Image 1 (cartoon, rainbow, N blue to C red):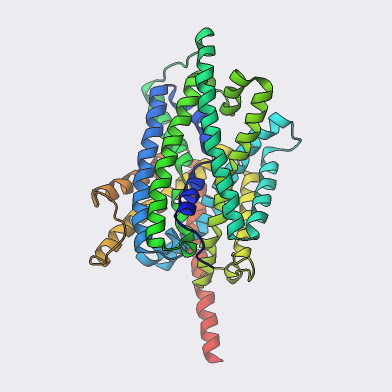
Image 2 (image 1 turned 90 degrees about the vertical axis):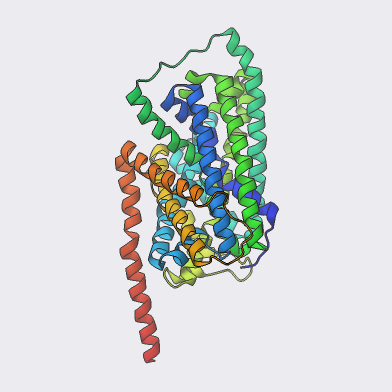
Length: 441
């Protein structure tokens, strides 16, 4: 593969990994769990701080290990190939496929009722995944251009939502908005954990930009800049969007809708304007899907290159220079997830496994710091080891919280993850057998 992407591309790819379906649906979940605008806002701020903390940690990891594959390569070099394999296995079957499915399902949630599409949301989501998979098969630049266009549309839609919120507030002042009943302490505690999961799912994805290190120019500098700047911009946009929904719709209306952007547009722009906004928001939610199809197959390609996954996944098309088979495999898996689960289930699957590996990423940085103590690097996480230790505690605390709040979904996600160990042993045995046969010949 060829190093064709620069800092601007890295910033937009980072933003594309985060900015998408979550912000147009999850604010409703968060206020529904917490019943208080102040608490909902605090949850989005807390999620932004966690995302920035994780972004700076991954920026240093990227500066220290600029190889293709991102977190897969960090885990391989810090621990053992089996740990890295389990991450890649989980990425394909749960994390990335689940994130892609969630984006596609959110698109369908907006489009199906608005346009009276005669398809189930899962079916339409699977068809959208197939379309984006096809686009990325044509080449890196085509995939990156498509993803950049969606990012700019996302930013534009958040600005439109904010303008609608300002206009809608006078409407709410005339017609008093209903309020939500306060929660008991027990329900509030349980809701806070689920709300944070929804927030972090919306912020999730900043780490995926490291998957394309092998296609960035000067990755030791380009990616750290892209991660930190891209996450900071998204945090600001998310806080603006959350304020807009709360300010324009009111807490009660926001808690009882799955399409807050459309409802807000209907208050100020009328049915026609709301229809246009619905269509544009639905399209904008595709940015995360586009980014994940663009970057995640690079991990499976690297696993195949390391000889611990199906060899076909390492195939790079001679003309388009993309890992063609890996892209198709990712698309098929994501489409199956979209057909098989609801949005909330997908959310819990993804977060329960993602943060297991985020915690391991923090431990990997401790290992690299000790192993390469005298090695100069282009970026270092501020306040290490305290900041790194804090992120580790938060990551595994989130896993525990999801397990308590959604034990069935968590067990499914973690069960799929653990199945990666016997799968790794199978691939490792097959590889050793093949090497032994070649030596005898």
